[in-house]
Image: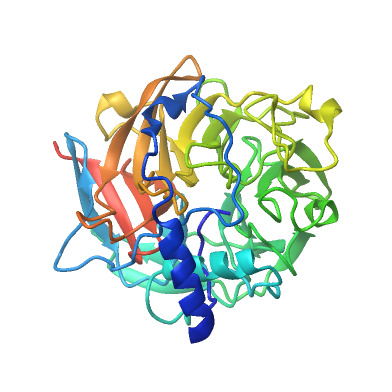
Length: 447
């Protein structure tokens, strides 16, 4: 389970028990190996470790204070494009340059039955930004009319949504992937709100469990199809295989009729759906399974092949068996596709965008930026940054480069956590920071 926005508040006696458990477990993983050899096409995969309750280490949320902001790589600069948002999870740029910030919190959780679920739910609540969730589950339009890199206009574009995440505009049709459905709204260029109630295109797997609730969305290049990332309903089917019906997959949806099929599956939690600009292949970042150790299993980015199976829950990174899943499916493991590029374990990638602009330094052109939300189950934190992966001939090349860091301070407290990414009309990188309640804008330091 990758940390999202949670609402669970533990009663004090339970909290005391949880705290004691965490203190006992906090010593676990002190000898963790550096995960730097877990990036690229051939990551190191250590021996498995299984836990009754896995080690947990969550960064305390403090937010951005005293004008602090993230650090950027040489040749770049960063400023807040918009502040004061309510859990911005993704960003989408409209053709006229307006930016949609999707503000979203998790749907109500199903009743918790197992002690481990209670502890992990409470841990999630510690990793969210402080304050009320009121005013979230909406889309806010941000407009920078004077081109100074800061939005002067902030207006409620769509409201009262069900945990929205993905957005796609095709012609005058705006599609919003909520946690349980895709909605279609009529869009007119320049409008700052949509009063139309919209129409439902298709249902998506939602509650009552709805473990991975974010639904990434992208339209096909010709606009006839929509592709939707639908995450699993568990870590490794502990809620029963029936709870995974049509999940851990990427759906292909006919935009005219709403009919859908499974385009690819075995992807535990696919997000950041994007088209690689040279080969035009569909790519995704994927959150892999937990509770096999601090360096298992590496999250990854991969091209997504039609009809492909990527292992979850029966195996990982090809044919590496997960013994916790019963019954086993050797027939599926035999055809499991090895992902293209590991990003290291538990970095929780939730956003990806290929850079096709020209305003950032030339080294970034054609490659992919990845937003890593950050780990919760390693003693040494991993992720909490935006990295860049160079591409050549449509394939990843070399090691990831840190581009935006500083979301953790020197005391390992979380000032922010990056999620969705987009490139604005002038060519700058936009970052949704759901803990810092900010959309950041990264541009070239040179004119």
